[in-house]
Amino acid sequence: MTPKKFAYFAPASLKEAIQLLRENEDAKVLAGGQSLIALMKLRLAAPAALVDITKTGDLLSYIREGKNDNLEVGALTTHDTLERSKIINKKFPILSDAASKIGDQQIRNRGTIGGSCCHADPAADLPTALTALEPEFAVRGVKGKRVIPQSEFFVDTFTTSIAKDEILTEIRIPHTPPKSGSAYIKHSRREGDFAIVGVGAVVTVGPKGVCRDVRVSLGAVAPTPIRAKSAERHLKGKTLDEGNIAEAAERANEEADPPSDMHGSRQYRLDMIRVFARRALNLALSRAR
Amino acid sequence: MAKLTEKTELVQVRCKVNGDAYTGTAEPRTLLVYFLRDVLNLTGTHVGCDTGHCGACTVIMDGKTVKSCMVLAVQAEGASILTVEGLAKGENLHPIQEAFWENHGLQCGYCTPGMLMSALFLLQRNPNPTDEEIRRGIDGNLCRCTGYVNIVKSVKAAAKKMRGVEVTA
Image (cartoon, rainbow over all chains, first blue to last red):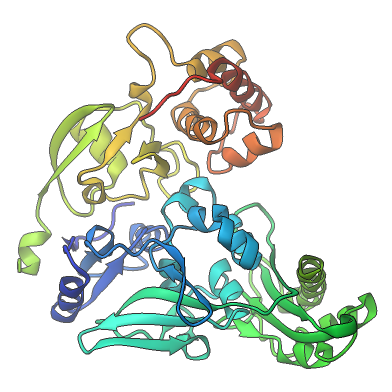
Protein backbone atom coordinates (compact mmCIF):
# COMPACT_ATOMS: atom_id res chain seq x y z
CA MET A 1 0.00 0.00 0.00
CA THR A 2 2.79 2.39 -0.88
CA PRO A 3 2.25 4.79 -3.75
CA LYS A 4 4.41 4.59 -6.84
CA LYS A 5 7.43 6.89 -6.74
CA PHE A 6 6.69 10.52 -7.39
CA ALA A 7 8.36 13.89 -6.99
CA TYR A 8 7.06 16.14 -4.24
CA PHE A 9 7.00 19.90 -4.42
CA ALA A 10 5.83 22.25 -1.69
CA PRO A 11 5.96 25.65 -3.43
CA ALA A 12 5.90 28.84 -1.39
CA SER A 13 3.36 30.58 -3.60
CA LEU A 14 0.45 29.77 -5.88
CA LYS A 15 2.35 31.36 -8.74
CA GLU A 16 5.18 28.90 -8.28
CA ALA A 17 2.68 26.04 -7.92
CA ILE A 18 1.11 26.94 -11.27
CA GLN A 19 4.55 27.08 -12.86
CA LEU A 20 5.36 23.62 -11.47
CA LEU A 21 2.11 22.22 -12.85
CA ARG A 22 2.99 23.67 -16.23
CA GLU A 23 6.55 22.33 -16.26
CA ASN A 24 5.93 18.85 -14.92
CA GLU A 25 4.13 16.48 -17.19
CA ASP A 26 1.60 14.43 -15.23
CA ALA A 27 1.75 16.52 -12.05
CA LYS A 28 -1.22 16.65 -9.69
CA VAL A 29 -2.30 19.19 -7.12
CA LEU A 30 -2.23 17.88 -3.54
CA ALA A 31 -4.53 19.52 -0.99
CA GLY A 32 -5.85 17.44 1.93
CA GLY A 33 -5.04 14.26 0.05
CA GLN A 34 -7.93 12.22 1.44
CA SER A 35 -8.98 11.06 -2.03
CA LEU A 36 -5.73 11.39 -3.96
CA ILE A 37 -3.44 9.61 -1.48
CA ALA A 38 -5.97 6.78 -1.14
CA LEU A 39 -6.03 6.36 -4.93
CA MET A 40 -2.24 6.49 -5.11
CA LYS A 41 -1.90 3.83 -2.43
CA LEU A 42 -4.17 1.57 -4.45
CA ARG A 43 -2.14 2.58 -7.51
CA LEU A 44 -5.28 3.62 -9.27
CA ALA A 45 -3.48 6.93 -9.65
CA ALA A 46 0.27 7.27 -10.16
CA PRO A 47 1.13 10.90 -10.92
CA ALA A 48 4.81 11.64 -11.58
CA ALA A 49 4.73 14.65 -9.30
CA LEU A 50 2.62 16.17 -6.54
CA VAL A 51 2.38 19.91 -6.03
CA ASP A 52 1.34 20.50 -2.42
CA ILE A 53 -0.61 23.77 -2.27
CA THR A 54 -1.14 23.71 1.49
CA LYS A 55 2.23 25.30 2.21
CA THR A 56 1.95 28.31 -0.07
CA GLY A 57 1.81 31.70 1.59
CA ASP A 58 -1.53 32.26 -0.16
CA LEU A 59 -3.94 31.24 2.56
CA LEU A 60 -6.89 29.49 0.94
CA SER A 61 -8.81 28.52 4.06
CA TYR A 62 -11.52 31.06 4.80
CA ILE A 63 -15.25 31.67 4.74
CA ARG A 64 -16.13 35.33 4.16
CA GLU A 65 -18.75 37.63 2.70
CA GLY A 66 -18.03 38.46 -0.93
CA LYS A 67 -18.69 41.69 -2.80
CA ASN A 68 -21.56 40.48 -4.97
CA ASP A 69 -24.07 39.27 -2.39
CA ASN A 70 -22.25 35.99 -2.17
CA LEU A 71 -20.20 33.96 0.26
CA GLU A 72 -16.59 33.18 -0.61
CA VAL A 73 -15.20 29.86 0.55
CA GLY A 74 -11.46 29.26 0.17
CA ALA A 75 -10.62 26.05 -1.67
CA LEU A 76 -8.60 24.66 1.25
CA THR A 77 -11.44 25.02 3.76
CA THR A 78 -11.82 21.62 5.40
CA HIS A 79 -15.04 19.66 5.71
CA ASP A 80 -14.70 19.93 9.48
CA THR A 81 -14.56 23.73 9.26
CA LEU A 82 -17.60 23.81 6.96
CA GLU A 83 -19.53 21.50 9.25
CA ARG A 84 -18.87 23.71 12.27
CA SER A 85 -19.01 27.16 10.64
CA LYS A 86 -21.76 29.33 12.13
CA ILE A 87 -22.31 31.27 8.93
CA ILE A 88 -22.52 28.11 6.82
CA ASN A 89 -24.96 26.53 9.27
CA LYS A 90 -27.10 29.65 9.18
CA LYS A 91 -26.98 30.56 5.49
CA PHE A 92 -26.24 27.26 3.74
CA PRO A 93 -27.16 24.34 6.01
CA ILE A 94 -27.11 22.21 2.83
CA LEU A 95 -23.30 22.51 2.95
CA SER A 96 -22.92 21.73 6.64
CA ASP A 97 -25.26 18.76 6.10
CA ALA A 98 -23.06 17.52 3.26
CA ALA A 99 -19.74 18.18 5.02
CA SER A 100 -20.91 16.39 8.18
CA LYS A 101 -21.69 13.24 6.20
CA ILE A 102 -18.28 12.86 4.56
CA GLY A 103 -16.12 9.93 5.68
CA ASP A 104 -15.25 10.28 9.34
CA GLN A 105 -13.76 12.85 11.72
CA GLN A 106 -10.16 12.29 10.61
CA ILE A 107 -11.08 12.61 6.94
CA ARG A 108 -13.16 15.72 7.62
CA ASN A 109 -10.15 17.20 9.45
CA ARG A 110 -7.97 16.89 6.32
CA GLY A 111 -10.27 16.84 3.31
CA THR A 112 -11.06 20.14 1.60
CA ILE A 113 -14.00 21.52 -0.36
CA GLY A 114 -11.72 22.40 -3.26
CA GLY A 115 -10.16 18.96 -3.30
CA SER A 116 -13.54 17.27 -3.28
CA CYS A 117 -14.77 19.42 -6.20
CA CYS A 118 -11.61 18.93 -8.26
CA HIS A 119 -11.64 15.18 -7.62
CA ALA A 120 -15.21 15.24 -9.01
CA ASP A 121 -16.39 11.89 -7.77
CA PRO A 122 -20.04 11.79 -8.84
CA ALA A 123 -20.99 10.21 -5.50
CA ALA A 124 -19.21 12.83 -3.39
CA ASP A 125 -21.37 14.96 -1.10
CA LEU A 126 -20.13 18.53 -1.49
CA PRO A 127 -20.23 18.66 -5.31
CA THR A 128 -23.85 17.50 -5.21
CA ALA A 129 -24.80 19.99 -2.50
CA LEU A 130 -23.01 22.83 -4.33
CA THR A 131 -24.82 22.00 -7.56
CA ALA A 132 -28.07 23.14 -5.92
CA LEU A 133 -26.45 26.47 -4.99
CA GLU A 134 -25.16 27.42 -8.47
CA PRO A 135 -21.80 28.73 -7.29
CA GLU A 136 -18.90 30.03 -9.36
CA PHE A 137 -15.48 28.42 -9.20
CA ALA A 138 -12.54 30.84 -9.21
CA VAL A 139 -9.37 29.36 -10.69
CA ARG A 140 -5.90 30.74 -11.23
CA GLY A 141 -3.55 29.76 -14.02
CA VAL A 142 -0.59 30.96 -16.03
CA LYS A 143 -2.81 33.37 -17.94
CA GLY A 144 -4.33 34.76 -14.76
CA LYS A 145 -7.66 34.30 -13.05
CA ARG A 146 -10.95 33.11 -14.49
CA VAL A 147 -14.32 32.11 -13.15
CA ILE A 148 -16.12 28.91 -14.14
CA PRO A 149 -19.89 28.76 -13.61
CA GLN A 150 -21.15 25.66 -11.83
CA SER A 151 -22.97 24.48 -14.96
CA GLU A 152 -19.62 24.18 -16.77
CA PHE A 153 -17.44 22.95 -13.91
CA PHE A 154 -18.22 19.23 -13.65
CA VAL A 155 -17.60 17.62 -17.03
CA ASP A 156 -17.56 13.88 -16.42
CA THR A 157 -16.68 11.31 -13.77
CA PHE A 158 -13.45 12.52 -12.09
CA THR A 159 -13.23 15.29 -14.69
CA THR A 160 -13.68 19.05 -14.36
CA SER A 161 -13.10 21.91 -16.77
CA ILE A 162 -10.06 23.11 -14.83
CA ALA A 163 -6.96 23.05 -17.04
CA LYS A 164 -3.90 21.05 -16.05
CA ASP A 165 -1.98 24.16 -15.04
CA GLU A 166 -4.82 25.83 -13.19
CA ILE A 167 -5.64 25.74 -9.47
CA LEU A 168 -9.05 26.16 -7.88
CA THR A 169 -8.74 28.94 -5.31
CA GLU A 170 -12.26 29.87 -4.24
CA ILE A 171 -15.91 28.90 -4.49
CA ARG A 172 -18.39 31.79 -4.63
CA ILE A 173 -21.88 30.93 -3.48
CA PRO A 174 -24.68 33.39 -4.23
CA HIS A 175 -26.86 34.17 -1.23
CA THR A 176 -30.42 32.93 -1.37
CA PRO A 177 -33.36 35.35 -0.82
CA PRO A 178 -35.04 35.62 2.59
CA LYS A 179 -37.40 32.73 3.43
CA SER A 180 -35.11 30.23 1.76
CA GLY A 181 -34.12 26.90 3.24
CA SER A 182 -31.70 24.24 2.11
CA ALA A 183 -30.81 20.67 2.96
CA TYR A 184 -28.71 17.75 1.79
CA ILE A 185 -29.49 14.18 2.64
CA LYS A 186 -27.73 11.06 1.62
CA HIS A 187 -28.59 7.43 1.36
CA SER A 188 -25.75 5.10 2.26
CA ARG A 189 -25.58 1.71 3.90
CA ARG A 190 -23.13 2.80 6.59
CA GLU A 191 -22.23 6.17 8.13
CA GLY A 192 -19.55 7.88 6.09
CA ASP A 193 -19.84 5.69 3.01
CA PHE A 194 -20.16 7.23 -0.40
CA ALA A 195 -23.75 8.04 -1.34
CA ILE A 196 -25.90 5.47 -3.09
CA VAL A 197 -28.08 8.49 -3.76
CA GLY A 198 -27.42 12.05 -2.52
CA VAL A 199 -30.01 14.82 -2.83
CA GLY A 200 -29.62 18.55 -2.27
CA ALA A 201 -32.59 20.92 -2.15
CA VAL A 202 -32.97 24.69 -1.94
CA VAL A 203 -36.45 26.13 -1.53
CA THR A 204 -37.55 29.78 -1.45
CA VAL A 205 -41.01 30.46 -0.10
CA GLY A 206 -42.99 33.30 -1.70
CA PRO A 207 -46.23 35.03 -0.64
CA LYS A 208 -49.02 32.72 0.54
CA GLY A 209 -46.67 29.77 0.89
CA VAL A 210 -46.14 29.48 -2.85
CA CYS A 211 -42.83 28.10 -4.14
CA ARG A 212 -40.95 31.11 -5.45
CA ASP A 213 -37.86 29.16 -6.41
CA VAL A 214 -36.59 25.62 -6.00
CA ARG A 215 -33.46 23.72 -6.96
CA VAL A 216 -32.91 20.00 -6.55
CA SER A 217 -29.54 18.37 -7.16
CA LEU A 218 -28.71 14.68 -7.36
CA GLY A 219 -25.45 12.83 -6.76
CA ALA A 220 -24.28 9.30 -7.55
CA VAL A 221 -26.90 8.88 -10.28
CA ALA A 222 -25.03 10.22 -13.33
CA PRO A 223 -21.40 10.87 -14.38
CA THR A 224 -21.61 14.29 -12.67
CA PRO A 225 -23.96 15.85 -10.12
CA ILE A 226 -27.13 16.87 -11.95
CA ARG A 227 -30.22 19.01 -11.42
CA ALA A 228 -33.66 17.45 -11.25
CA LYS A 229 -35.19 20.06 -13.56
CA SER A 230 -38.47 18.30 -14.10
CA ALA A 231 -39.18 18.18 -10.37
CA GLU A 232 -38.18 21.83 -10.05
CA ARG A 233 -40.53 22.86 -12.88
CA HIS A 234 -43.35 20.96 -11.29
CA LEU A 235 -43.00 22.65 -7.91
CA LYS A 236 -42.24 26.24 -8.91
CA GLY A 237 -45.27 28.50 -8.50
CA LYS A 238 -47.26 25.88 -6.62
CA THR A 239 -48.25 25.86 -2.96
CA LEU A 240 -45.55 24.18 -0.90
CA ASP A 241 -47.69 21.49 0.68
CA GLU A 242 -47.11 17.82 1.25
CA GLY A 243 -49.01 16.77 -1.86
CA ASN A 244 -47.20 19.06 -4.29
CA ILE A 245 -43.80 18.17 -2.81
CA ALA A 246 -44.56 14.47 -3.11
CA GLU A 247 -45.66 14.94 -6.72
CA ALA A 248 -42.51 16.89 -7.58
CA ALA A 249 -40.35 14.26 -5.91
CA GLU A 250 -41.98 11.59 -8.08
CA ARG A 251 -40.43 13.39 -11.07
CA ALA A 252 -37.00 13.83 -9.49
CA ASN A 253 -35.49 10.82 -11.23
CA GLU A 254 -36.41 11.84 -14.77
CA GLU A 255 -32.97 13.26 -15.62
CA ALA A 256 -31.04 10.56 -13.71
CA ASP A 257 -29.07 7.82 -15.41
CA PRO A 258 -27.78 5.82 -12.47
CA PRO A 259 -25.42 2.86 -12.68
CA SER A 260 -26.05 -0.60 -11.26
CA ASP A 261 -23.35 -1.81 -8.90
CA MET A 262 -22.85 -3.73 -5.67
CA HIS A 263 -24.37 -0.88 -3.67
CA GLY A 264 -27.66 -0.83 -5.54
CA SER A 265 -29.28 -1.55 -8.86
CA ARG A 266 -30.24 1.14 -11.31
CA GLN A 267 -33.92 0.68 -10.50
CA TYR A 268 -33.27 0.82 -6.75
CA ARG A 269 -31.45 4.12 -7.19
CA LEU A 270 -34.23 5.51 -9.37
CA ASP A 271 -36.71 4.62 -6.63
CA MET A 272 -34.55 6.03 -3.87
CA ILE A 273 -34.16 9.36 -5.69
CA ARG A 274 -37.90 9.89 -5.32
CA VAL A 275 -37.87 9.01 -1.63
CA PHE A 276 -34.87 11.14 -0.77
CA ALA A 277 -35.93 14.07 -2.94
CA ARG A 278 -39.16 14.24 -0.97
CA ARG A 279 -37.30 14.15 2.34
CA ALA A 280 -34.75 16.75 1.22
CA LEU A 281 -37.45 19.12 -0.03
CA ASN A 282 -39.41 18.78 3.20
CA LEU A 283 -36.32 19.39 5.31
CA ALA A 284 -35.33 22.42 3.20
CA LEU A 285 -38.87 23.79 3.49
CA SER A 286 -38.89 23.33 7.27
CA ARG A 287 -35.75 25.47 7.41
CA ALA A 288 -37.21 28.17 5.17
CA ARG A 289 -39.90 29.05 7.64
CA MET B 1 13.52 25.14 -9.55
CA ALA B 2 14.55 21.60 -8.65
CA LYS B 3 14.43 18.99 -11.37
CA LEU B 4 11.84 16.27 -11.06
CA THR B 5 14.32 13.38 -10.70
CA GLU B 6 16.08 14.95 -7.75
CA LYS B 7 12.84 15.29 -5.89
CA THR B 8 11.79 11.63 -5.97
CA GLU B 9 14.78 10.66 -3.80
CA LEU B 10 15.06 10.85 -0.03
CA VAL B 11 14.11 14.16 1.45
CA GLN B 12 14.50 15.55 4.94
CA VAL B 13 11.46 15.85 7.19
CA ARG B 14 11.57 17.91 10.35
CA CYS B 15 8.73 17.78 12.79
CA LYS B 16 7.92 17.83 16.48
CA VAL B 17 6.59 14.62 17.97
CA ASN B 18 5.33 14.58 21.55
CA GLY B 19 7.20 17.82 22.14
CA ASP B 20 10.59 16.56 20.88
CA ALA B 21 12.15 17.82 17.66
CA TYR B 22 12.93 15.08 15.15
CA THR B 23 14.67 15.11 11.79
CA GLY B 24 14.44 12.09 9.55
CA THR B 25 14.65 11.21 5.90
CA ALA B 26 11.89 9.73 3.84
CA GLU B 27 10.90 9.22 0.25
CA PRO B 28 8.05 11.52 -0.80
CA ARG B 29 5.86 8.42 -1.02
CA THR B 30 6.55 7.35 2.58
CA LEU B 31 3.38 7.51 4.64
CA LEU B 32 3.52 9.34 7.96
CA VAL B 33 2.71 6.19 9.94
CA TYR B 34 5.78 4.39 8.53
CA PHE B 35 7.90 7.46 9.16
CA LEU B 36 6.80 7.47 12.81
CA ARG B 37 7.27 3.74 13.23
CA ASP B 38 10.28 2.87 11.09
CA VAL B 39 12.31 6.08 11.02
CA LEU B 40 11.53 7.61 14.42
CA ASN B 41 10.98 4.21 16.12
CA LEU B 42 7.71 5.34 17.65
CA THR B 43 5.85 2.07 17.27
CA GLY B 44 2.90 2.88 19.52
CA THR B 45 0.94 4.05 16.49
CA HIS B 46 -0.45 0.96 14.77
CA VAL B 47 -0.97 0.11 11.12
CA GLY B 48 -4.38 -1.49 10.86
CA CYS B 49 -6.01 -1.63 7.46
CA ASP B 50 -3.50 0.60 5.66
CA THR B 51 -6.38 1.82 3.48
CA GLY B 52 -7.65 4.78 5.46
CA HIS B 53 -10.64 3.05 6.97
CA CYS B 54 -9.86 1.69 10.42
CA GLY B 55 -8.27 4.62 12.24
CA ALA B 56 -5.74 2.51 14.21
CA CYS B 57 -3.00 4.85 12.93
CA THR B 58 -4.73 8.01 14.17
CA VAL B 59 -2.42 10.69 15.55
CA ILE B 60 -3.03 14.36 16.36
CA MET B 61 -1.27 16.61 13.86
CA ASP B 62 -1.32 20.37 14.49
CA GLY B 63 -4.22 19.89 16.88
CA LYS B 64 -6.40 17.70 14.68
CA THR B 65 -6.77 13.96 14.38
CA VAL B 66 -5.50 12.50 11.12
CA LYS B 67 -5.04 8.98 9.87
CA SER B 68 -1.29 8.78 9.56
CA CYS B 69 -1.63 6.24 6.72
CA MET B 70 -3.45 8.92 4.74
CA VAL B 71 -0.82 11.60 5.19
CA LEU B 72 2.60 11.68 3.54
CA ALA B 73 5.57 12.12 5.85
CA VAL B 74 6.65 15.10 3.74
CA GLN B 75 3.32 16.77 4.47
CA ALA B 76 4.24 16.70 8.17
CA GLU B 77 7.22 18.97 7.56
CA GLY B 78 7.14 21.59 10.33
CA ALA B 79 4.14 19.97 11.99
CA SER B 80 3.57 19.26 15.65
CA ILE B 81 2.40 15.68 16.23
CA LEU B 82 1.03 13.90 19.27
CA THR B 83 1.11 10.11 19.30
CA VAL B 84 0.01 7.64 21.96
CA GLU B 85 3.53 7.73 23.41
CA GLY B 86 2.95 11.36 24.32
CA LEU B 87 -0.09 10.73 26.51
CA ALA B 88 1.37 9.31 29.72
CA LYS B 89 3.64 11.49 31.82
CA GLY B 90 6.35 9.13 33.05
CA GLU B 91 4.65 6.45 35.14
CA ASN B 92 1.38 8.36 35.24
CA LEU B 93 -1.16 7.34 32.67
CA HIS B 94 -3.21 10.00 30.93
CA PRO B 95 -6.76 10.21 32.36
CA ILE B 96 -8.10 8.76 29.11
CA GLN B 97 -5.72 5.79 29.42
CA GLU B 98 -6.75 5.32 33.05
CA ALA B 99 -10.40 5.40 32.07
CA PHE B 100 -9.90 2.79 29.32
CA TRP B 101 -8.05 0.60 31.84
CA GLU B 102 -10.71 0.95 34.54
CA ASN B 103 -13.69 0.48 32.21
CA HIS B 104 -12.32 -2.35 30.07
CA GLY B 105 -12.30 -0.09 27.01
CA LEU B 106 -10.13 -2.56 25.16
CA GLN B 107 -9.77 -6.27 24.56
CA CYS B 108 -7.02 -7.03 22.06
CA GLY B 109 -5.80 -3.43 22.23
CA TYR B 110 -4.92 -3.04 18.57
CA CYS B 111 -7.26 -0.13 17.92
CA THR B 112 -6.54 1.50 21.29
CA PRO B 113 -3.73 3.92 20.35
CA GLY B 114 -5.90 5.45 17.62
CA MET B 115 -9.02 5.30 19.76
CA LEU B 116 -7.24 7.22 22.55
CA MET B 117 -6.18 9.96 20.15
CA SER B 118 -9.71 10.36 18.77
CA ALA B 119 -11.07 10.39 22.31
CA LEU B 120 -8.59 13.12 23.28
CA PHE B 121 -9.50 15.22 20.23
CA LEU B 122 -13.20 14.84 21.03
CA LEU B 123 -12.79 15.75 24.71
CA GLN B 124 -10.68 18.80 23.91
CA ARG B 125 -13.56 20.08 21.79
CA ASN B 126 -16.39 18.81 23.87
CA PRO B 127 -15.51 18.19 27.52
CA ASN B 128 -18.90 16.74 28.37
CA PRO B 129 -20.14 14.70 25.41
CA THR B 130 -23.31 12.63 25.28
CA ASP B 131 -23.14 8.95 24.33
CA GLU B 132 -24.23 9.89 20.84
CA GLU B 133 -21.57 12.57 20.52
CA ILE B 134 -18.94 10.08 21.69
CA ARG B 135 -20.07 7.56 19.09
CA ARG B 136 -19.87 10.22 16.41
CA GLY B 137 -16.49 11.36 17.73
CA ILE B 138 -15.01 7.90 17.26
CA ASP B 139 -16.69 7.32 13.87
CA GLY B 140 -13.29 7.02 12.21
CA ASN B 141 -12.02 4.30 14.54
CA LEU B 142 -13.01 0.67 14.14
CA CYS B 143 -12.89 -1.83 17.00
CA ARG B 144 -13.53 -5.49 16.25
CA CYS B 145 -13.57 -6.70 19.87
CA THR B 146 -15.54 -4.56 22.26
CA GLY B 147 -18.70 -3.68 20.39
CA TYR B 148 -17.85 -0.11 21.45
CA VAL B 149 -20.01 -0.19 24.60
CA ASN B 150 -17.06 -0.13 26.98
CA ILE B 151 -15.20 2.34 24.81
CA VAL B 152 -18.08 4.80 25.05
CA LYS B 153 -18.17 4.15 28.79
CA SER B 154 -14.43 4.79 29.02
CA VAL B 155 -14.59 8.06 27.11
CA LYS B 156 -17.44 9.19 29.35
CA ALA B 157 -15.40 8.33 32.43
CA ALA B 158 -12.36 10.09 30.95
CA ALA B 159 -14.46 13.19 30.34
CA LYS B 160 -15.38 13.22 34.01
CA LYS B 161 -11.74 12.91 35.04
CA MET B 162 -10.60 15.60 32.65
CA ARG B 163 -13.33 18.17 33.05
CA GLY B 164 -11.69 21.46 33.68
CA VAL B 165 -8.24 20.01 33.01
CA GLU B 166 -6.58 21.34 29.88
CA VAL B 167 -4.56 18.85 27.82
CA THR B 168 -2.84 20.02 24.65
CA ALA B 169 -0.52 18.56 22.05
